[in-house]
Length: 150
Image 1 (cartoon, rainbow, N blue to C red):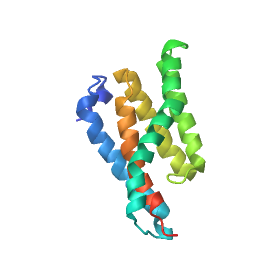
Image 2 (tube, helix red, strand yellow):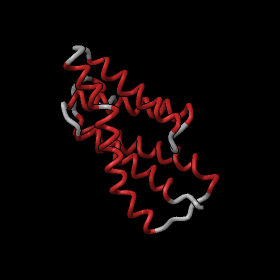
Image 3 (tube, rainbow, N blue to C red):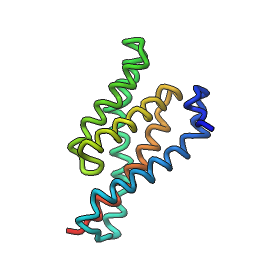
C-alpha cells in the first residue's frame, strides 16, 4: 500500500513520521559510511551540542532553501512545480560541498529530501513536518560529524 500522501490524500500526520524515520535510517547509514574511515571518539560535550545545532540548522535551511521557493511558486508563479523543482535542486546542489552527505550522491539524496520537504510544505500549508524531518536528519548527521576522531 502506498503512503497516503503519494495518493494525494494529504495525510501527513499518519505517514510523515514513518517516512521520516526511514529517511533518518538511510541518512544515518550514509553519514556513518562517509565518516567511518576517520573513526569515532564520542564525547558528552559533542553530543549535547547536537540538539540545539540540529534545530538551528534545520530551521535556517528550511527558511532559506524551501519556504521562499514554495511560497513564490504558489503565490507569484501560480505553479506548485516551481517550488518543488527549486526547493529540491538548490538544496541538492549546495550539498555537493557538504560534509555528509556530499558529492554526487549527496546531491541526489539531498535533492530528493528537498523535494519531499517542499511537498510537505505545499500539502500541509505549514512548516512543521519539513522542520521536524529535517531536524531528525540533522541530529543523526551531526552525531557522526561532531564525534569524528581527531
